[in-house]
Image (cartoon, rainbow, N blue to C red; front, top):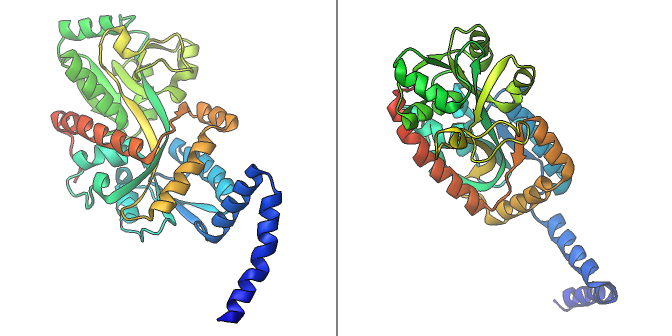
Length: 337
């Protein structure tokens, strides 16, 4: 035992001299670095993405994963597990060991919509995960073909009321964000419009251009070029504020349907029971990443904006949207076994 204390005194003295002679900021940095080296993370982190490689969600996840790996000093390995609207990845990640080395790139769909849409979902995402932090938000835009005789949201609602059941809206499929955007629009406006599901937004947009459907809600990033060249008419963006990519296009709320707000978000979640210190570290580094100008620029190319916040902020957002979308899914009649 005396030998141990002699060793302790031997290395403590030069360390104390070093820290005493250093500036206060350097002391803090030295302590933080020592803590980070000795603690979390000590090995690569797996980031599960609920959609295939190559899509916009995957692109965003890879951007954030790369930036986090730079900050954390450990690789963040992307694990794409697409299929069943994200439920495969949701269930697999929820059942992973809650040690901070498996995290989930969660979305509005996986966390707030799927629990009401899928009859056989094995986990409740609201209860099965710890929130790490929101990452980014994006909005859809309501577009109509040039052949439709309307110029704004009020005109569209008036036309739908004049011809109940005659107007149609396309989507990427039952339960997709653009499907539920249309259902919320239908409900809030008190109109009768018919949903036409497609296998993906691209097929729906082809029919929109041909005038075979009356309208659709699609991502801003997908529609900017067509709106700019006048191939379609943009009536409103779905968020609470205008999109930087379409500054001249009003929100649906300001254009004639007050209170309408559909914002699609992305975030980081971890299996329930993940160590609090891991959650705190991930969130802290995420805030730094989202504040970087180059990250903001790259998110903008994906039609998104940073959405910084605490784990508690993200948990509140998930709970609010789960409560919001549950009734919309039920009213739409959409279910998936």
